[in-house]
Length: 238
Image 1 (tube, one colour):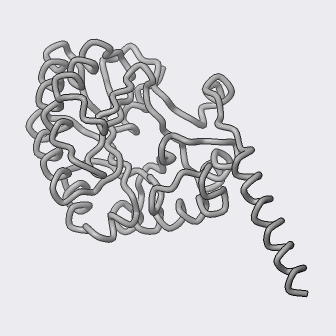
Image 2: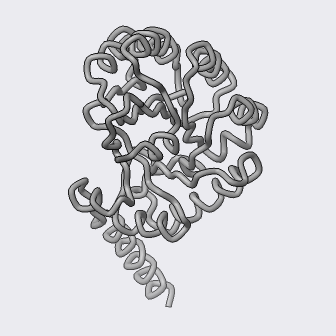
């Protein structure tokens, strides 16, 4: 009987692996017309949404907040639930500064690695924490790594979430630390009305990101751009 149980375990394991591996990422042209997923927004207004992933960080998030305040910019912080538990005082700083919180899962796993059921649990747990700080927050979800298949999209929808990705022409990759000027130049060169910028305030050394903010925020403000949260950007959709 032991070998029978062993075979069953092996079969179940490989079935689960096959299910995870067979999930396909959703293509933009498949879902953008439905409005369930947002990459950017069509608008005549010179507004750009700032988003920050992988925080909160006790070192870098307060520095980001200081720069945003200096230039009168609003943002959405897609935070990781486990880090919110570690640094509640930093989350409170974000909220008190007038920014909005978004759901970036509980522990930042990729769905194609862990499967749909765990991702459902990840979203629910992170939402419970966000509710403590912003009970009436706009329900915005960004999947870790931007990995999104139909199962995860439908789960987010069933929980009342809009999925927020980012403008692909603004693929900044600040996490790779290419240089503050490189990041800033890319933002300035490719800036369009309705952009959603993806930056990071947690998960590593974010000094270049902070320096880049100090360069491109004033430069684009001089060109008439305003920096807003995702929910503010969505309200400007035409």
